[in-house]
Image 1 (tube, protein in one colour):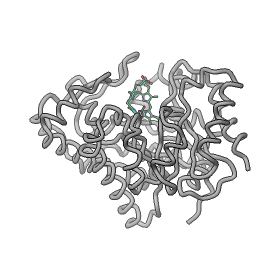
Image 2 (cartoon, protein in one colour):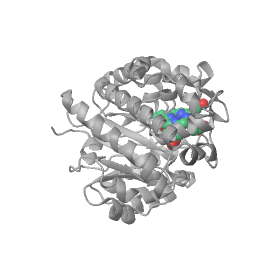
Image 3 (cartoon, rainbow, N blue to C red):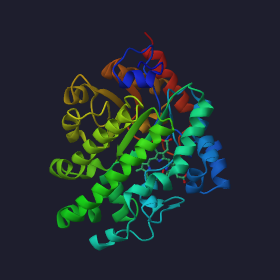
Image 4 (cartoon, rainbow, N blue to C red):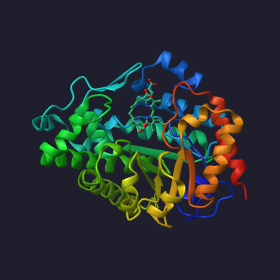
Length: 351
Ligand SMILES: Cc1c2[nH]c(c1CCC(=O)O)Cc1[nH]c(c(CCC(=O)O)c1C)Cc1[nH]c(c(CCC(=O)O)c1C)Cc1[nH]c(c(C)c1CCC(=O)O)C2
């Protein structure tokens, strides 16, 4: 079952004519047309309205020759579906008015089994986007990894240390595992629903990997990342939906790479702190790597961006590679720099 799409081919280790490229946070506030939508609707209203979610998902895809669309949503829709309130505060980001304060608060969470129904608006947005794209490029579905989402549910907002969330791992390991398992169960169902709606690749964002020690990673993150990948792939196969490629992004987690190389994830996404050659050595020959230009390199001029893209491709190679940034775009970036980045990837990787 071969795909015509560069992204899917690269994820499977197949030959590509050019290295595929997409950009984390390619839909967002750096685009004037996104900011315009945000004057009319609140962030989560956009997520929950399939027509609006489709419209902003399409915005970067209409501007740039990107090799994938990523459905416009957020990793925090899972806590919302489990009954927690999440607000998007301008200038601050996501805020939980009532974060989890003690293990007894876990009893207030709803069941994992109903998230697919609660989040059916995401499936509807994917269906609409797939229809709009008419197979021009694939749609990426995603979920936050259990530890990353757990940390938000406990901290209640972004944190420089994640110390409150980490205190649970040391003081309440049993409750932490219970919460991580619930998030895992919800994530599996939610990702399968995204595939059923038409998502052709799934990415798991472990954006808070960098706060863990190797020991905490092995205990509180890796087992759940493995479960998500193995269970989703198994269910998708059982439903005769084929083999779904999956990506794991352990932000800041260079110490996770060799273990992730032993999992069933097809693609491992790396941030800009990792040398391409070292990433390859750590994950082995049978994984596709994704990344990893420093997002701030987009502040450079055209020649500066092109020079770094050329070097990046030389480091990763042209096969088993998906070009991206090492993390998301920032709101003050110039859309023109994305055009330069995408064109440079295609130009320097044409064979
Ligand atoms: C940690 C995380 C979140 N959300 C997400 C992650 C994992 C990826 C990562 O590590 O960045 C995932 C996410 N969030 C968003 C997407 C959309 C798809 C895309 O990449 O284009 C994706 C894949 C849109 C968004 N998610 C958010 C915005 C901006 C909110 C706005 O419009 O007001 C967008 C476009 C809000 C958000 N949501 C989150 C934060 C920390 C913020 C605030 C950050 C900021 O202020 O830029 C939680």
